[in-house]
Amino acid sequence: MRETTTHSIRTTKTIINMKEIITTLVDTYKEDKKEFFGGIIFGIVWILLTWFLLWFSATFAYDM
Figure (cartoon, one colour):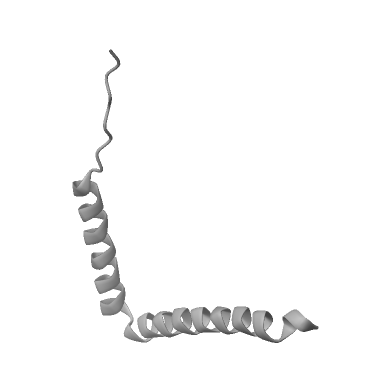
């Protein structure tokens, strides 16, 4: 008979990476608050612009 192997996800590595991400965010916030919020606002505007352009091209530019 053939043995079946199961693959397990190591959650400890994921938790460590999340701790590093949170620590990096907190350090960035403490170092320069203006740059931190500027980066967040830029990311939100980037996502909204991308969404708008995809919506616009599907709605209006498709018929041209």
